[in-house]
Length: 69
Ligand SMILES: [Zn+2]
Image (cartoon, rainbow, N blue to C red; front, side, top):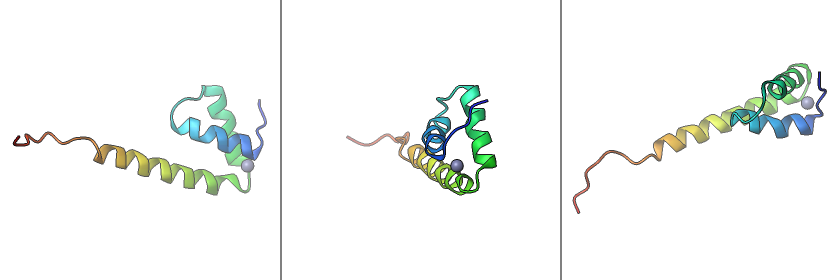
């Protein structure tokens, strides 16, 4: 099993949220966050930002309106 530093875990966490990590790395990040005293709060903050961005991305999708030209 891999031991990540906090910086590595945070770095990987954003990739994880983008779904770009292998299962092995996902688990390594998960294990670090679970066992780390400081990372859970940061991870939750990152997760919140990620969800907000997803929401905005959906809102920005063009509506199916027929604009009069
Ligand atoms: Zn940590």
